[in-house]
Image 1: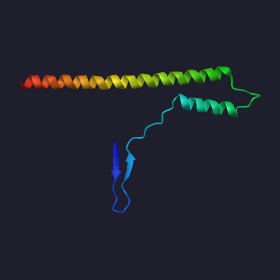
Image 2 (image 1 turned 90 degrees about the vertical axis):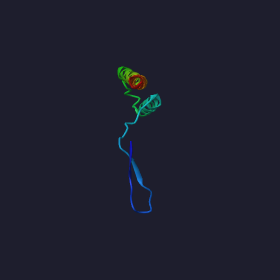
Image 3 (image 1 turned 180 degrees about the horizontal axis):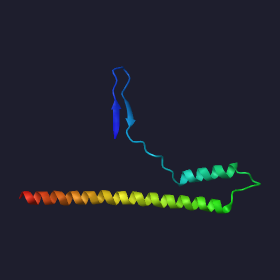
Image 4 (image 1 turned 45 degrees about the horizontal axis):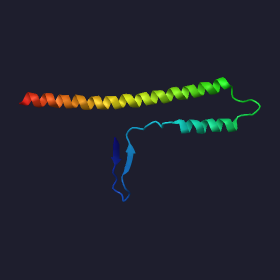
Length: 96
């Protein structure tokens, strides 16, 4: 949803989103963060392997959750279409 603000001046109206969306991170972002972390860490005191594996597991879990959420949204949208079609069919049968 987008709301517009009109003004009486010669400048165009300002359009602002009514809902701010959180930025999404993907594997490319993770690799950038990992690369930055690896280049800035102290070679004499590297990151613990357990911590690195834990970060990778968290990212994998987040990705799986995101994919599941998208799949559920798609299923919900398809179900809404089916239910709307059934409701329209029921209403037209009642009118005849």
